Length: 369
Image 1 (cartoon, rainbow, N blue to C red):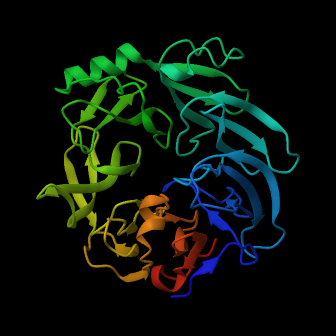
Image 2: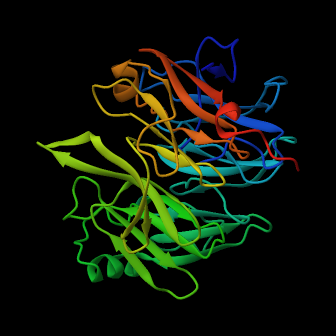
């Protein structure tokens, strides 16, 4: 299977963002990715954001420069056809901005916060922990730890869960808060933006943590202790994630499975086999997962829904230092039409390429519009 690079002329590294984030603009015309000259020096943080044509990969241009580490890069995704959202590092703290890629205008930000995977229904979620308090004077409503929503149409910011809510939901579901419980990550809105989930650090789940969920319309809360990992919304009411198990003190690769869960943690079905970082096609008939486990090549597996045997395997890089020491994870992600899979392809111990494969011949001819 042919592996295509988004940028062949660059001697440094190129990066996509998080699995389940979306590098394509909604109209399918543009891609956003990152360029970083050096990835093997933790002190080197300068990273450029670039956009190019989705189909031809031509007309590449730099739209912004940030500071960030390698893991998930700047987490850049499109929020509409004109704007991207991405993270930066300012005075040692994370912040995010919303930028017009055509004019270069920063529409919103920087907002000091922990960024999320992507926007849903014109709303971008983010989380505030103690280190961000007092850092956003332009947004006086950001006055306590919790989960906030940015409405992209007019910039309104509102809090939908505070620290007390998070602690209460953890305790009510049999978990023990710790000093990192409010440092939530992987905050994601459901497709209709009426539910939100987040990863929670809790004392009695030291390996995987807990997965929290809040129904924003009813206030009902849910927690899955020792959660499945790299979770994404499957639909508006259920999750897809990788269920992992610890065997002889190590996370076991062979027994991992891509599965679908209720918000309360009930497994509804197995969607695919071995995986770690995952995604599902828009029609939820195909699933992709990487073998990003220490000591193994970072193969990427494409599964037909319900099968634990991959239809095709690709990638397969085996540069352990780059994958783990330099934190370059494959993060496979489907395109909006389900015909491509984007992934970070490690090509040496010191270099990675933002790449994709075309799976049109596997998933079937594109339906007539």
